[in-house]
Image 1 (cartoon, rainbow, N blue to C red):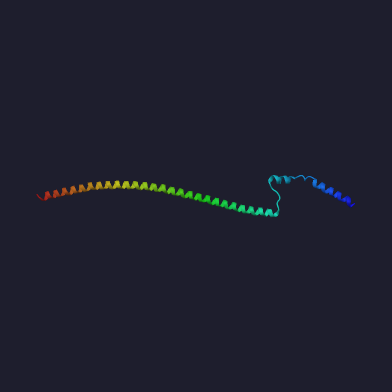
Image 2 (image 1 turned 90 degrees about the vertical axis):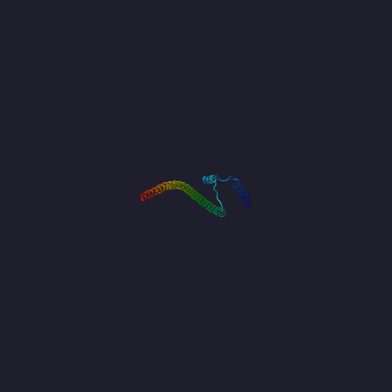
Length: 138
């Protein structure tokens, strides 16, 4: 009997080994198409640590990008403000130069008027002296 059981068991084992793999289930097909697969706990923890490290690096990179963009905007605002100050300064210089020119022309006009007034005054005094001299000599 032992002799009959051993070949029968060998036949069962051989048929099981030669049998085709079980048909894949819908879940197996979905996992295969999505690229997911089962991994051991150790590999999962390794992936999780790598993923966390990558997420931290990504967050840091995004923070640096935001910081850089903020600095760029701040620099652009400063440049616009400086350009506006330069334009205002140029306008002030032009107004100052116009006022200087107007002031010079006013001074020249006032000096010529003063010269005319002084000449009239001198002429009037000279005329008064002549009249006084004529009146006192009579």
